Length: 181
Image (cartoon, rainbow, N blue to C red; front, side):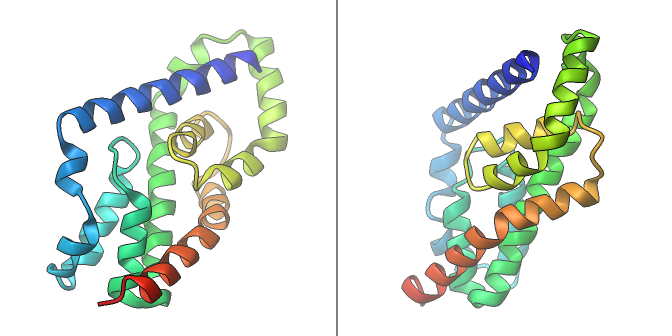
């Protein structure tokens, strides 16, 4: 289990370093407050916002502001739905990154460590995926590690949807009520 915790810590540090580098390069300033410029895009705002939410896996995208913008621009129902698609999509992208690098991550573990971690993560992995969705950096790291588990993308999507549902609704309600045009 210790090897998985080390992998989780290294992933968190790596994502934090990538966020720091892209912030230093000015990416976050470029995105700024997405509500102002997304409104001007009309129907394209939905696609651009999805792309922003999906890129949040490796870039410092202000996903909560994007989700609030969804509620403001598209209303509660469509805004929450769009945010949910964005959040679940980001989780799946992270999962496939983990699948791609699964052999590398598992190569540093002994067979007994893998077996111990497998038993623990099979028991608690779904819970970790659900509760980590609204937590920046940890959400991406856990989703990447989920790619090393024998977990189907459909099942992961269900866990991600459960974890994202309430925050997406709350952000959409906030956007529709407080930041309405």
